[in-house]
Image (cartoon, rainbow, N blue to C red; front, side, top):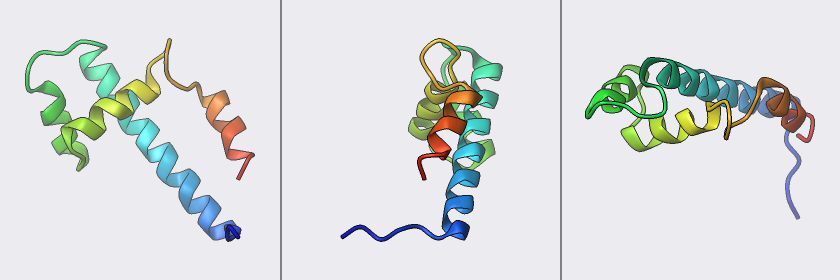
Length: 79
């Protein structure tokens, strides 16, 4: 049986998701959907993540294919 999350665990999880979303928005703002070689790797290093994670977070925050803040809030309510 699956263990239920505590309120603290839920808040920590939401905080981590919001932090990741913020990184994705920053990467997207600084290099858009297409970037010059090495730019994402530099931004990833600034945020303490690897290049692959930075690309995934950028996709998460993309306007057309990612999540809106309202969609994230809706997902949080499922916790």
